[in-house]
View (cartoon, rainbow, N blue to C red):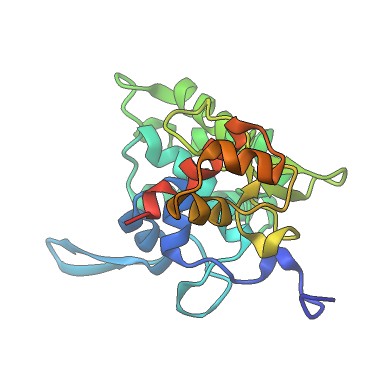
Length: 229
């Protein structure tokens, strides 16, 4: 009812800047994936179309878009793969699975992952990482997506620190707090925790007030730190 009959997963509520922060992906990369970009060639300036199709106007993103960017982030985390090459692999998956969002489909965790890597695997510098490493990184990202009994992606546990072993203490759920990041298992937004922390309240005080474990409070603060400036 509160979403006017719309699927909350498809409502555009995140700006590219918010996606860049919460997904720990460089802002320029997000803008390139969402808006596309111009690039010089010997034949003149060419246009690279967006990799992700924003759900709203002016590049505003939905929860589904956030999931797509989260998985694409696996490629950028340790591999320098050109947009043209990524786009070719995505187009292949869209045709293979007849889906507008193949990176979000449950099949991505099985056949899709291997097909995706195989499609552009020869483009990865094997001396640095190789296909096995890419599948491992994709696995780490796909495991951060929680699905319901029908295989629908319903929740994302974004990385809140460097490395793929970041704890799952912060979640993004389109049905909780209007899709804002919260302490997992609660409706306590990370933004509220961080605002009170900036105002001078200690993590110990916040832990008692919200009745959440100290490590959850610290992770909520860590989630927001990069946007403090």
